[in-house]
Amino acid sequence: MYHDNRRIRINRFINVAQVRLISNDGTMVGVKPILEAQTLARTAGLDLVEIAPMANPPVCKIMDFSKYLYELDKQSRENRKKQKAGVLKEIRFNPRIAKHDL
Image: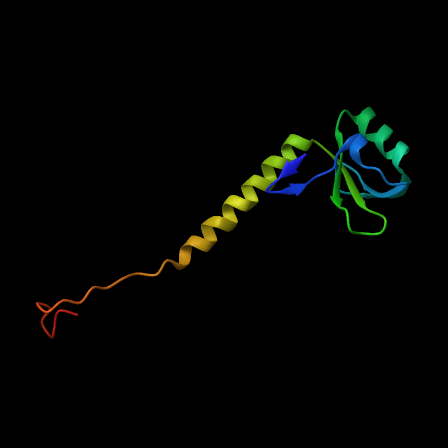
């Protein structure tokens, strides 16, 4: 799956031997084999989402993937709003402006 040109691996697309697993409520489960982590996610009825692929071992979280995408979109929208706050205003001068008009 892709989000903002960033590849997000979920469920069977995570192809590593072991992952550092975080449960749905945010508690650290520990380092688990990938098959065990996928089984835990499947029994919970949720997805196994790779959060930090560059970590050693990669960090994965058991969560609802559509909710994760929604939160990423919401965060990127808020970041864009903050960037627009610094809009540069423009003043035009012409020969008819008097000295005390500014």
